[in-house]
Amino acid sequence: MPRTKFVAGNWKMHGSLAGNLALLSAVRAGAAGLKAQMAVCVPYPYLAQAQSVLAGSNVAWGAQDISEHIQGAYTGEVSGTMLSDFGCRYVIIGHSERRSYYGDTDAVVAAKFAASLKAGLTPILCVGETLTERDANITAQVVTRQLDAVIASSGVAALERAVVAYEPVWAIGTGKTATPAQAQEVHALIRARIAAESAHVAAGLQILYGGSVKSANAKELFGQPDIDGGLIGGASLVADDFLGICVAG
Ligand code: PGA
Image (tube, rainbow, N blue to C red; front, side, top):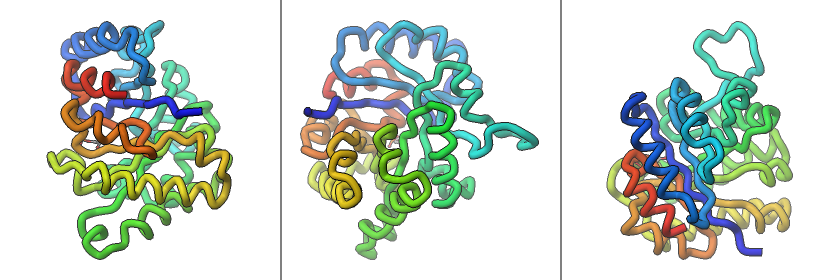
C-alpha cells in the first residue's frame, strides 16, 4: 500500500484574524479536489477560527505544542483535551524551536507525545540535527536518540497513530534545503530504526521533510521513496505557495 502524501503547514507565531480569514479561505478553496492529505497548525488563539473556516473541508487543523499535563495549575499551558475541543486533529511535538528556546528536552517531548495520543490527537513528532551536529557526523545518533526517547516511553506501536517530521535545523527558515538525497538518507535511517522494532509500523509511517520546502523543490523531495510529504513553515503563510506544495503531494 503506498503511503498517502501529507502536507502540513506550521504557521509558527504569525497571523491576525483578518489575514487568517483570507489565507484559510484561499487554502480551503484551492485544496478542494487535491489528493494529498493536508493540515495547518495555527497559533492557539486562532484554533476556533481555523475550525470555523475549515470545518467540512479536506484541510485539517492543529496546534504547534501541547502541555504534557491533562489539567491543573499550569499557568499558560494548553492541554490536549482543550485542543480536541476545537476539533484539532494534529499537534506538532518537539519542533526544534521548542527544543532550543523553551527547554523541550527529549523527556519533555516524549511526555507531550504521550499526552497528545491520550487526547486522541495525532502527534507530528519533529526530529533533526543542528549544523554543528551534521558537521560532526552525528546526524544519525541525534535523530536516533530523539526517536528512541519516544519509543522508550510510548512503545513503537504508538507510531501507528503518529507522523514523524525530519527537519534539519540548519534548513529551517534559512532558504537552505537539504538536497533530496541528503533528506532521503535520513528518512531511510529513521524508517530503518523503526523497522528494527516493527516492520509493519515502519512501512505505514508517514515521514515528512521540513526545512525551506517550496513549490519549486517539493516535487523532487516528495519523489524520494521515504519522503511522504512536508512540514511547511514560511511557505504555508502564502496560500498559492502552500497550495503549490500540496499539488506536489
Ligand atoms: P520553513 O520551516 O519551511 O520556514 O523552513 C519549517 C518548520 O520549521 O517547520
